Amino acid sequence: MADYRLGLRTLDEEVTTTLPVEGSLPPWLSGTLFVNGPGRFDGGEDALNHWFDGLAMLRRFEIEDGTVAYANRFLRSEEYEHVVSRNRLARGQFGTNPDLSLRDRLGWLTGPTLTDNASIGVDWVGGEFVAVTETPRQVAFDPETLATRGTRTFADALDVTGTLGHPHWDPVRDEMVNVGVRYGPRSEYVLHRRDRGSATREELGRVGVDRPAYFHSFALTERYAVLAEPPLVLSPCALLAGRPFVESFEWVPERGTRFTVFDRQTGRVVARPVADPFFVFHHANAYEAGDTLVVDLVAYEDASAVSDLSLSRLRDPDAELPAGEFRRYRISLGAMGATVESETLHPGPVEFPTIDYRGHNTRPYRYAYFAGNRERPPTTTQDRLLKVDIEAGEEVASWAESGCYPGEALFVPDPDGAAEDAGALLSVVLDADAERSFLLVLDARTLDGLARAPLPHALPFGFHGQFVRDLADPTRSMA
Image (cartoon, rainbow, N blue to C red; front, side):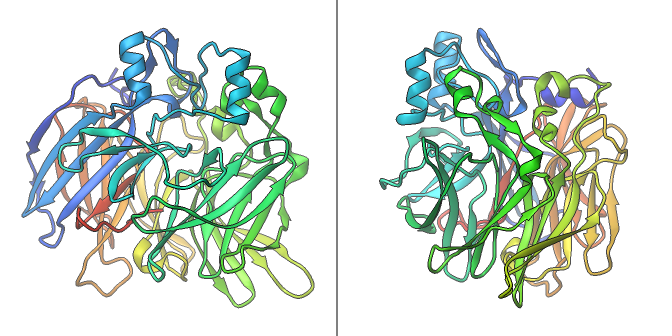
């Protein structure tokens, strides 16, 4: 299989090795890149239905003195161990359910033990590195060896069922902010915070919802947290029917997409304006401009962006895949009531937005980076990286090579650089023709290639990562 579908195949091999480096790594680039994502695409007797369901595999790239040390290892979660020992899933996943009893289905709503297949990203909680997913269950791992240390939960009694896989770090307050969802007869969104590195969350505010939406990330400004609630809303009866989690939601476009704006200081909801319907996985940035909130995100026309990421769809070489566009929403908080307007910043197809997170998250910014496609609608996973100059309103640089499929690009700032785009982009790229992956390092100003480090195998496509300069006191490099 010498095309992008190679990245949707199980990788059984785990290695620890030093990679050859082609080109020259920037002398200032030193630290560890952790990337999380699926590594196994079957649950034993339970066939996995969705890309998000693959069993988690950690990837580690240690960059020091011009060298790259690499390791990959399956996360030995309870879910993984159950599949290995019993040849089937233990719990329902995002798009796949084992044969659950009615008692198990009721338990999901009233006192769930959710999956710990933590394949979305990496965080630092309770003084430990943890792999995270959209449940409150994380899996701790050794940052040096990737050895699993066990499943963890937060050290508090905050009543939430699900949580977003994309918390925000506020470097001014040095705190983490996130949103949880409590499912039940009266569901709620719960905004909460914790000190960076702590395992104890503190509620900031909550709001009731009749039918909670599925959302994967949110926006943060200096004073506000903003939830973009697409009209992909929960049908509780569907959960009891034993459907997979994602199939328990239905697209109701007449509801529109609602922006719920929390005041971070008081926890009060200050506005809930509604825009035309759209779906969103990832936000790029948000900030305040007087009485207006500027929220930048990757928008899709509808929830087919979720179903089109099923494994059967992704593996169909003739299928049209999701095509997101980079869009800006302006939410006015004026005295006459909140209003919302939108504009397209780049027509796409784009995904996995990246910015200079530490320098410009919650603040005005100029540059955004994406993984994207050269054709619209796309028929492969992302096949290029691109840079958008928001002030100029145009794409200003791109990188692409035949047969190569890049993952999310992480921006690493040059510690001596003054410009917003002074730094490097790191991306794990599948070279389908060579049937192996490589770590790509680009100049963030021009997207010219600086270096690459070929791997001994083809990695499955991953999700999200973090670049850490100090393992003893890590700060977040991505939302």
